[in-house]
Length: 187
Image (cartoon, rainbow, N blue to C red; front, side, top):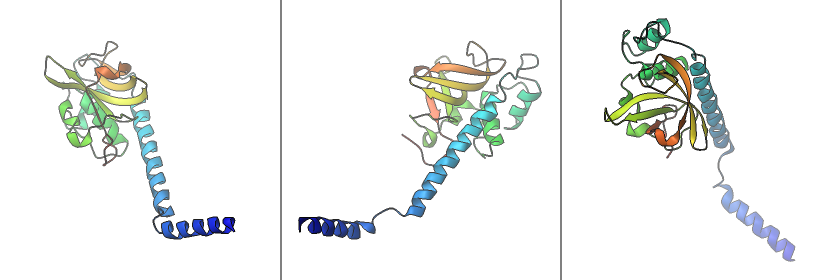
């Protein structure tokens, strides 16, 4: 008799809550969307990693590849190009934004995130300039460290570098992270 009551109780709960259960198609769409986002993030990192080893022709923000990055934001040779590199990579991945060379503009409040993921944008603050003055892409996050892919830097991590490099930076040295991949932001 007690078993029948328990079963009847469970059936009542299922009947009452059944209409509140998430639609399976909605769950499938959410999972599919997440997978697509992860594929896009991996694509961004792969495109950027494919540019490792690119160097300026004369050390003056020039050269065929550097000028291609600058052209992505309609700037000619001679301009700083870390933001252009980020924009070029996103464009090659099929994203319309960002198309920005001015690094502080890569970090609008609507795009900021405290939980960086692969493919997000990072920015370094330079006290002498009183602004974010260098940006690149997050390749991997591991504990307190971020592996980055960035243009217009050098082995020492300068903002006035000579090529595309992979860097290992401590999270404390990074001022901002921005999510340009998905409309809704993470906290």
